Image (cartoon, rainbow, N blue to C red; front, side, top):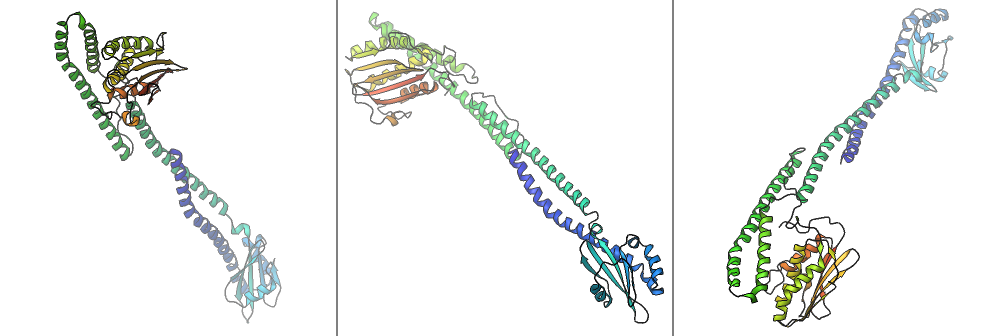
Amino acid sequence: MRRTLAVLMVAVTSMVALAFLVPLALIVRETAQSRAVAGAERQASALVPVLALTTSGDDLGHAMARTEAGRRGLLAVHVGGGATVGTSRAPAAQVAVAAARTRASTVELDGGYVLLRPVALDGDRGAVIEVFVPADDLNRGVLSSWAVLTGVAVVLVLGSVLVGDRLGARVVRASRRLGTAATALGSGDLSERIHPDGPPELKAAANAFNTMANRVTHLLAAERELAADLSHRLRTPLTALKLSLDQLGPQAEPSRQALARLEGEVTTIISAARRPARAGQSFGQSFSRSCDAAEVLRERLAFWSALAEDQGRPWQLVGATLPVRAPVPAGELTAVVDALLGNVFRHTAEGTAFSVTLHEGRGVVGILVADAGPGIPDPEAALERGASGSGSTGLGLDIARRLAESTGGSLRLDRSSLGGAQVQVWLRREKLSKPALKDT
């Protein structure tokens, strides 16, 4: 922007300077020429009284020697019917024409101009005073005046560039501050604000940014408070459910374990929601940033196997015998696995087989959940939050997609070898560039 403003100022100021300085330069040259011709006329007028008294060559020579033009050899007198006194440069024909006139005239020659001044004498006689004006006299002071005008033009251009650069620097500085603040706010620094500065438009943009930042901060605070409140409300039904399970005896032990885990998750959500938000912080970010994916899958399949056995579902876990490091916390990976397996149990009939495959590639970890159900008719719609249908909220696939994309990976839906749907969660093991799950 500063470079553009500088070029603009140079162009505008140069055009304005040329519009004024070119006519001024021409006027200066014409003025210098007029001044030189006027000087020659004064030199000629100085000899008119002498010619009125005498036309003697010696007397005229003495009178010419007293003038500047005469001393420089630029003066001559042509007396009608007599000899020419001084050094003549004008052609005889031009002198004859000038003698017939009643006023002075100029003739252009190589190297300058000649002024011919006719003078009427007694006895119908006449004379012509010739004054030669060299080109140096015609252009005396013109070059220095043009140099001064050029200097003025350069100073004007430089001054305009300096002023434009200062104005541009002010605009650029305010714009950069706005961009830096927007980047900081987008990175999670909710305390970022801008002091309005610069042109009125940028001040208005800064005020709008501050208003937006305040609004976002209040919305996030209200959302965190709502999440904590809703999670806290779950404690009452969970407590009642726990008391009911305690009366069922040892056969309800798997349900009690699932309930204990659910209580732990609710406690984690409440603690994270109550914790003051900091830049770049999200739920679960205080835990380890990696986990053993094989161990997580073995644990979750052991949990879901009891329900699968009750419903007569054949299942298989492939590739989870050796440790495989995944670049996400264990709690978040557990939530994704439970969400995907929950979709299998929710959207397929009892007795439908499913399989979970853990794949470790070069820089990636893949978790493939496949079933023998009817499949997904519209995979693109299923990836849209809230568009899964069948009474579901659609959050399961959304949670899996966000976890995959947080590592630079992806979520894919296609047809499985069992004949139903296959959900592929690919996690990249390179250095993460953003948090695993955003605060929402």
